[in-house]
Length: 440
Image (cartoon, rainbow, N blue to C red):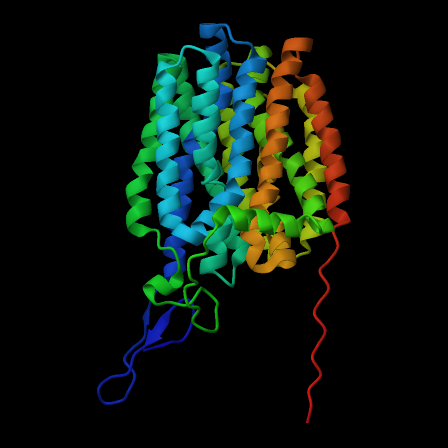
């Protein structure tokens, strides 16, 4: 059988030597990408919760927002720090096993919060367990799938898989906010646990580790790629790749810009937008719905960013994204009000388009500079993203406790985004390898 194209129009010879009519097959890579998309959507439920739980936990247990923010910080930090090791574990044990176990750990951590009575239990369940599980479901997972299954359309696919997280937020955030408002926070925690468990069968049955497992080439590849042998020493490999990457300038610039990305999205807006809006008299369900709208436009923006990344300079794309994000954050304090008005809707749409549009060009720059090690390098870059998010998740709560307002955090994040735009512009291009002269 001869495969004539990656869209898999197939021409098979008949017994008499003539070709049969061609039949169109969709390359298996797209099915794997679809399962990955659904998996990330299911896992994204837990990411919708922290901003919804801050006020209910403060009211029920009397914990300060800084204390609750500390648990969110542990979660966000582990989300990033686990990612490079998870990428290495996927090389050792396979994508399917690592992701299935990660979903189980998320379900365990979220479910156990129902019985907590002390702040340290919040740190253990939501910080440690959910942080470790979610770190194994981080964007390094999407990077691994993209690198293994695609040689063409990588920017587009990475954009689509990144958008899956926003889609999960879109699906679960209005539901969870309604549950928290009507039934309090415990049923919402159980919903998160059940959502994570529901995805496990799909992962186990449908998520193949490598194209060679089903006898196919990666999408766009000219030749069949054998499945590599399992790589032992996952932790050692992750640290070895880090040791090599930190000796290069692009790593520090990518890590620095992505730390600011995390600070201005997961750490600030996702964690503190709902309580900040509530401070101005906006109902929690309304504020949560606005975050869900951010998720809608994030899908559009991230997929579009993947398309742009396949065609334009990733450095300039990052500079534009960070500059526009910083400008929008500077205007947010004057837009918060008890009700939704057109300028606030404009901010939501604008910010949504830019939310994680930074991921496809950052992934592309990791591939450009670090080749086969790029999923692990991106895992470490993602770790910086989550450390930045963790710092601001805590700092935002502490600033609210100290100043009675989030304004200073919005302004500081806007300034940081301007710095990130400048950093993106100075990332050097990787020099092209010299041409080997031909001999006659």
